[in-house]
Length: 151
Image 1 (cartoon, one colour):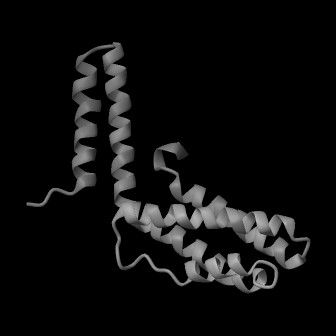
Image 2 (cartoon, one colour):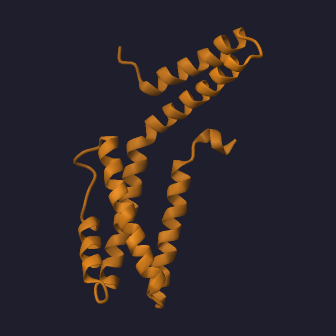
Image 3 (cartoon, rainbow, N blue to C red):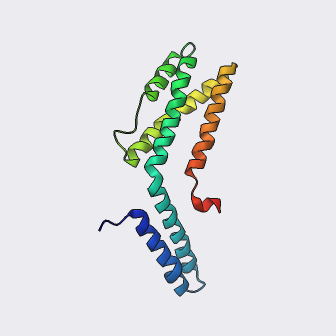
């Protein structure tokens, strides 16, 4: 038998919520246990989607960078080179969450540079790029939401 992480966390969370916390009555420790049970549920949900969410976000950023490289090149060739290099990257060779997070931090730092450039550019193309950046920032926030935060 191979225990699934999400299943184990849900079982422990349920045990704490249904049996352990109520047995302590209305106490500070009971409240802390109920909060811990909720956190275990959130951890289980995040564990299940961790790699997929990070790959989706990294791919979305790389698409933006691929589209932006040609726009940026005439004015900021160094930034354009960094964008093109990042756009050609892939996460599929290593799906460890720590690696995906490291790539995401690098991509987000590059996104900040790109956004600063676009905000200083008074062109319609730069405005379209800014809209794409803000759309992805909103989408990434929604991807990170937990089901319990929708209640």
